[in-house]
Image (cartoon, rainbow, N blue to C red):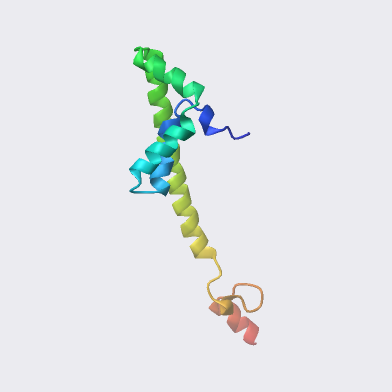
Amino acid sequence: MALRDARYDSICSYKCLAICNERAPNNEDYCQKACKTYCENSKEEKELDTGVKKGSMVDKILEKSRKKKFDANRQDNAKTEKLDLWLGSQIALTNESDYANGIKETGRIREMLKR
């Protein structure tokens, strides 16, 4: 699956602001300007915005559902990232002495190797 350029997304500004505010907190003005510039040529976003402003129920539902799906995916990704970090910390090499013979040496293995 190829990644699409966000500028071709019907909720480009919404996504851009969410990501920008996460990565550059407390920089509202910067994010507003950067996302406006980044998404200003999004034909898809302009079409959806026009439909919503004209009162199209289909476009309103589409916009709301796309934003909701985007937010849900971001929450899932955040949870997965936290779990990955925790799992990585549990299995990561912590002490060189734990892997003295190329395998993780628990107390039982150390006793066996001493014999």
